[in-house]
Length: 268
Ligand SMILES: [Mg+2]
Image 1: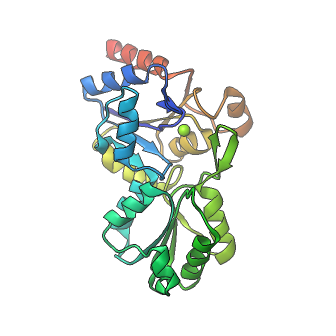
Image 2 (image 1 turned 60 degrees about the vertical axis):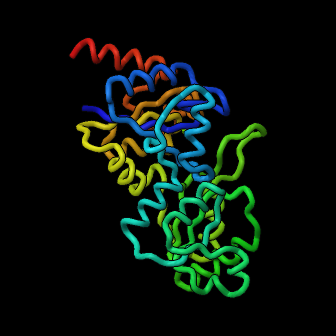
Image 3 (image 1 turned 180 degrees about the vertical axis):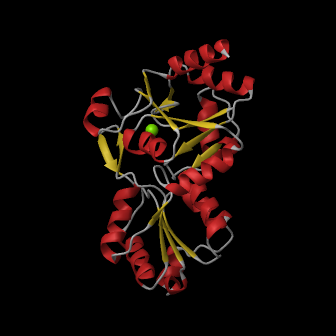
């Protein structure tokens, strides 16, 4: 049995608009009991917030199928690290996930009173309310020996006016100030693969469907998944030629992926 991992932004929707064929494809997979999950490098929202967003577009997906880089960070830390206090630089989604760990989150107020000295993990993601002070306490804690974890490597993300600074840009600032190499959780890194595979369960083959060559398709190539690029998001056919990251399959939209799956079903 195949299992599918879908990136979300640029694949399932763009902004607040569902992508062509997304709804039909998801219904098809659910009806046939094909294992699938959503895996996004975004950590600003949590899975329940994404479920709401998807529902508002008519796409009904259980919360359990949604993995954000914030949730992946939580699951990975739970499995591999010992409990310890956390300092978070990130949006509401990441803050929620870190609180759910139950290890204790040191807030800014506490950090100001010297609480940063007790921090054992600095977890950084995209923080739309980033301040110098947050970077300062993150830096102090890492320099004192706290483990440095980054939710995802994306240095930018596409927004209306152009490219905005992403989590990777914030992580880079901490890296520059500390000379410490972070553990990065999101695509195309190994922790995301480990968490995704565990969620997917027993499958013989994994298909990774994404819109970005440098994260989604590189991720697929690194871990022996079939990399399917849809041209509804960031990367174009021209990028395929220029980057040398070659998908196994390039499809204009999810509609063609649904056709492809239907043909496979008929042939088997
Ligand atoms: Mg995307």
